[in-house]
Length: 489
Image 1: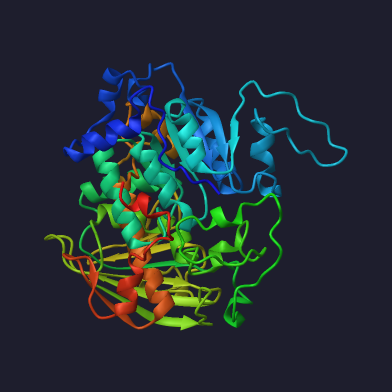
Image 2: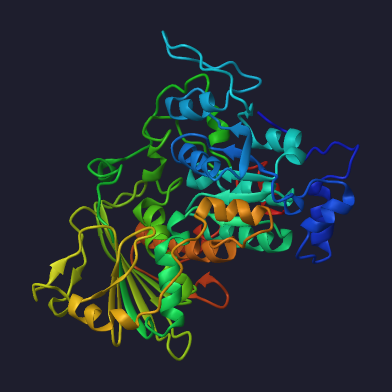
């Protein structure tokens, strides 16, 4: 087990030491000062220079993110880190960036690929990676399970390293609050990985909101009704399943800050962690960032004052429900931002209905594909997930207005290039922690309602749940022993 998480080589001032000292004096923008200290700063990169990127969590979504970041031609991958470097899901990343200190483990009969032009060092512990390579890393992609985003992100920011973190930003409300705070103090570029937040829906929603088309929104329905990993078995679980841990997996480290070790099982790793309350965020935390992101930002929803579990089917204390309907009540925020109810639907047959006055048939219709319906006093908008743009319904209403609708830019950097350009000081990220973090906190509250049921009352000023002591404790549970340091950065 890795012990020395905060060891610093004494020969040169480190980004970590400088950031901690500056933060103590309330400094908000720190990176330019690294140049004066003789340390590398990504904001000091020449326009032609690429960002040196580390990847933590290299399989599945992490592998897709790595490829997309490389496709921008704005970065080099210099380090790969995963608690399971020999899993089938990490195969692609391992062989594309042939490791300098670990020979590739190839399937029987398959030839070893040509040596990559760029080597990446391999690690199984992010703390060791940062101790050894912090001054060689400009930015890091973190695509580990939801429960393990926090510690690596906090350590990276404390070292002055830019961070791209997959959605949802973190597993608990308190973790998000700390990440937002340190992002502000550190001055690093931050991006949450809700990729559609750099697509057509982002620019259209922004333009339509600024143009007065989207206003006076009083209710929103959002939905994701595809089959999830826990459907069909989650309702019957009575305990965590257990199998022998493969020798190449660091299972203790997989738990990260979570205070209780759980048994290893293929029902937990590499992807089934999404099913469990202790480690995942369910359909809501997984898809909500792709569906409600623009509503939350441009309608300035902030945090709700009440969260209600309207319906929960197939309830289990360990695993997410088979279906759930969760309502969030947001208060009035401005003259054209009245109180708004946002209702989330998940589960295979738990579809919201669009009223007949807004459908082509004139009869109520269930909404099938993941997306949202936004109801204002004058207009109704329907949209899908990710970058899918909105349409005004019914179609006749759209045809009346189409020539007068505000235009929006069509050619923009995608979410990955936007992050890397921000690392180079050329753009600002579109889903920084101050935006993605508060959005995630809405999901954190929704998950508590899915877990506990009933109605939760939330004080927006104190950020406390006032009517449920268990839910209040789960807003910010204590980390495991030895991991407290990440909560103090």
